Image (cartoon, rainbow, N blue to C red; front, side):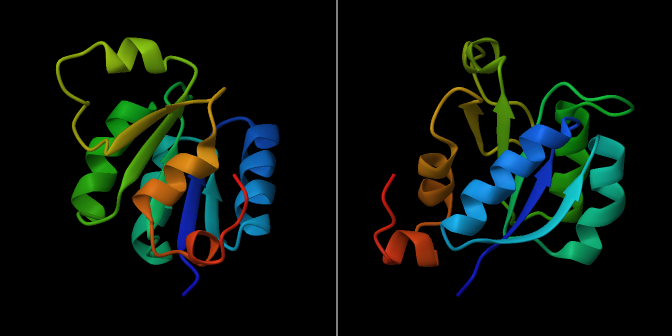
Length: 128
């Protein structure tokens, strides 16, 4: 089964890099959004299995978007992909709607595989 991933980041280069890494590892990218508001507008129609969400974006930031996305997609894990991970992780609990946090300098694929362990990439033994 190909898992469907929705990528939300205001930087087109970051979206392209994430897309390339995940598609090469057997994931399907069901959509991309350039900010939180755009993500909320698309999420219900896309029906993703995972949402990768940036924190700092125009119009609607990742934390506000996560709350909205959680109500639209209650069973979909939301992975916050940010350079501000140390600040988020220092809190007592994760922000509302966020399943896990990954620093943009860390291995994103490893975190995706933890959230979607039965993916083709995980079953196929794709090198991390």
